Image (cartoon, rainbow, N blue to C red; front, side, top):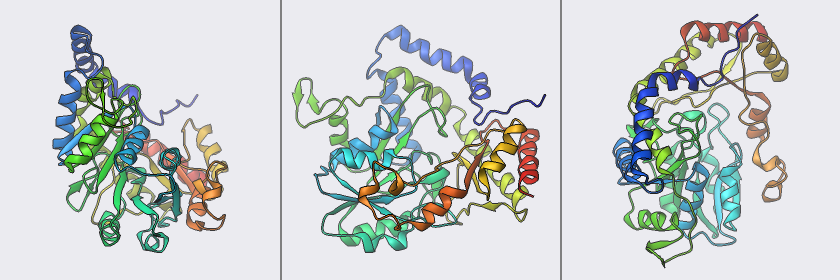
Length: 367
């Protein structure tokens, strides 16, 4: 019987870090400060140093990071935020929850990131921000996006849930715009053992707003300066991320190496590959390819014990919750991608033998 691979191998990662994770978590259990304990501040300082951003504010999830960033910008009902149609629902969800209007822009067909050439035409007097998504672990074209934002006086929020650790023109994802928002969901490049996230900014006033918003708008205990949420990342999850940071540089190196090997082994073999632009890298939160007859290919790989996933099978402008915000034909590249994208097993601990097994099975299935 063929052994089944893990889509994301968290068990091997845990085995390598088991002792450090236990020590970090035991320290929290010993001091008993489960909310806003010392590990929260330690993690924020280390993540700020890692990205180069002046401020890091840990929060309850990557979704909460987007919401708090929008709240800090004081997004009002009817305000528009330009974003991509090809992303997880959380991106648009937070805009709508604030009463805002998501304005969907199509993607670059070869990277699946928002196409910056299409952004300016969507700007109106109601536009307040641009929210690009750094999909699959590769940063969007932030230089062009930031230039558009400056011309029109807009904020930029990078949805960096999949790209923590990636670089763009020598800078880190998360420290490329007004805000960077990331996720520590377990499957992300840097994950905890539950939900968690972080906001990055170098704007002192916005950072202070985020810190207040995440604790119910408090500037001091029981002094509610603004409307907020219960958006803290708990101390135990911060302890887990601190332990994982100890081998994170190695994991990023491995992700890049494994991604490059996938590209090398599949190039010119009948499978269309994502492009990685020369001024940036990719940390491959998901190693994603384009295939025809996807269901058939997935079934063939599943029979070989190789799991796959689809990120994402339906763009947001085709989702019932968001269809009213866009015309049905506005994002044809997003629709094409949704029909063809397929993600393969990827993690820092993926062995060479298992990677070769995945590649051979994929080539056999697409012949």
